Image 1: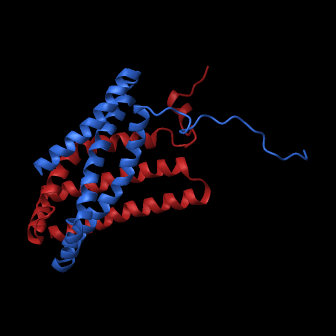
Image 2: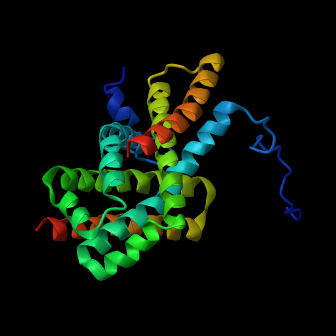
Length: 123
Length: 127
């Protein structure tokens, strides 16, 4: 008789050693983005092509500002993990590591630049 | 031991071997659209950053974002985001263990392709 629970037996197993954590994060962020993205597309699409003052006015409002921040953060984390999945399928060794570092850095950079812009516009 | 030549093992069939089929095409497009969306995101975030910095810088970024190049990137990204959106919903449905039989998978594939085009057109009209 085994006294280990199913959970304990599965932990740390699999090629990734992280089990289904990656997949689960992609599912959670996908559901979140499914709610956020349509409204964001509408707000962004309406703002694009307008004058400077109008654009500032749109993103200075709480709803568009917070929504854009959420889409950027969750979207770029979702992108980062998805891009890593692609890199791990096609690249090996040092090039794989460098590519993973690059997309991770790029993802955080996009988040940081977007947050800086939103904060500057809002304040 | 002298013979270090690698054993010729049969390779598992890869992309080139398979006959192209809809679930395969739509799955590959999910990856392509998801990763390609970074281009539209970079342009959009640069445009927003320029707006935050000041009017002169915004004029430059806005000229690029509303040029033919910007239109191409954003229209392409709009289709890509709707495609990835519907394909992602399909993934969640698959992950729930549903729709995996071939006739349903084919229908879902067409649904994703046609739906993404329809949603893109609707968005362009509304926005």
